[in-house]
Length: 457
Image (cartoon, rainbow, N blue to C red):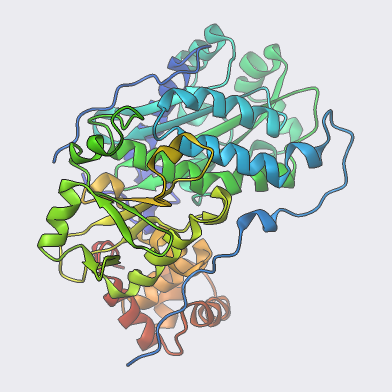
């Protein structure tokens, strides 16, 4: 079945697939019970124009706004500090090698945002299949009741998170008033008896056949989920995406410390270990095969290169960022379309190999670059443009329309926005991509090629 288009994303009645998979995620997230361990085994996988300016390498940690301590135990500043953020991100990446660590990560997220419990799940649309799920401790009987008694439409805020933007937390009380929430059967019969208040759900993965959700639920004894807490979750989201999708690629076998590089050579997924400057230290057999046929990744003078010239700089920038703290990588290096126009689609995921972590077993390499040619790993076009040029979701949607050849007036009509709003977005897009005309944007989208070409207007 074809993946839903951007035009239908806002209407769940036109997206039965999203509705179906979201119902599946309810059961995925509740199967883990109190243990918080992975609930599913993964199924085996089969084997001279001005250059656009790409997203900056500014650390996302610096974006956390200062806030006065509100007297919450431990202090809001302490709970949401850059040190806590960096530490949790490091634990998230360690879950690539040790998936049992997800339960511990969920416990740490719960503490950071002062929640009652936190769940995470990555699900596939095919056969309603679960890829993995974990949670911090909570009453397994109540979690089972959640699965059995409430569907997709019965849980306040779930639909809005599923059809909303990736990396944008959705708090229940941002969608309805406290009194409206308290009148819902879900609150009256499930949340209230347990002393719970509201949830905050973040969609961290959305590919043609994968969706990932992180959900934090708070106690009634505390206030609403703050803007700072939502921002903290938004900063975690791209790292959850990178770790979960790379882990999903490694479903045929786990890389362990005992196997080290020998394990890489037995993986069907191409993997390249590099220095921070992109110098190749090791490539497994699958990656060497790609080098031998000159695509979609290349080895030039010992440096890793992308076949797609527009993305080549973004790949090297992402690799260079791995020399810094895990958090500095942000959304860069997630699902980069590395194949050239007209070639079979392939995307790259960059995993930092930071000192002092379980991933340091691969040092002196700074980065592990995973290449996937599977549909499940290909991000939606909007996510590709957001990653490459640091666009907002709204700007990415405008670029997709203009880049496909639509006029400004037709693009505005298709997106349901005014022409003045579209012009504002266009000016920002020109600045971020280093272009000046709409024709330049058409060429830019054409040069990026797949997976953008598969999602026309």
